[in-house]
Length: 260
Ligand code: FES
Image (cartoon, rainbow, N blue to C red; front, side, top):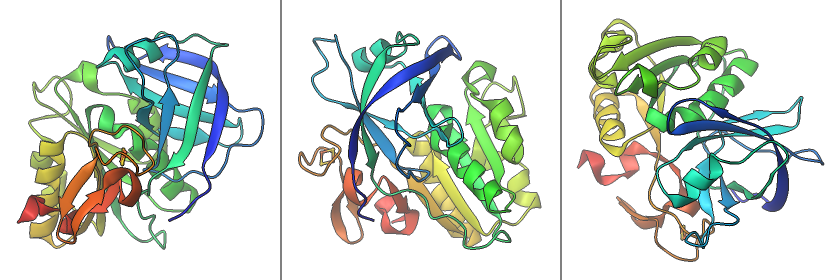
């Protein structure tokens, strides 16, 4: 999908600490934000960080159209993202958006969607769930983390649908991995959308394949330019190499070599 891209200087409205490495940044635009789809991403410019030359790709976590706000969920895992979680209200963040292709939204409210996320990979699923609910659907979330502290935005997810949880240490929800949750044996879903660590998405893709369910995954390959020029995000697929920032980041898992 070709969409016009914008470079916007957005104002930080708030930067909320969610855990020792996670933060939720809410950004406000002066003019109405352009249309963005769940699964698309933003390349943000990190100012005042001499070691961070390139923009950083961050998933769209939520778009609050009423307040004209864009939300980004940040995991501080490198110099650039550590800088981002220190931003304060009133600071500005330069964003290139919207980038990439998002998840396929269900064509009717009757399509039963399961949204499976792990760690900070839950980010695009909040916006996806809100868009499904807006169109009358009832998304089901299956969210996993190592432990309770890694579960992010749980109250927000609950506003949009049923939420099932797994933690590896059993501190909340069922103990184990998302693909071991009992809801997968008890309910039938029409489609799955997933985002999170690669081993988790691969196991979700294998589950979907066994169950005969269409599945899309949002890949988190390393990215630099975000606009198809540097080739650092290449992924092998059954149709040859693709650039995840252009043809993805959301891809049907049957196209990937994960199942082969
Ligand atoms: Fe540069 Fe994809 S990030 S080509």
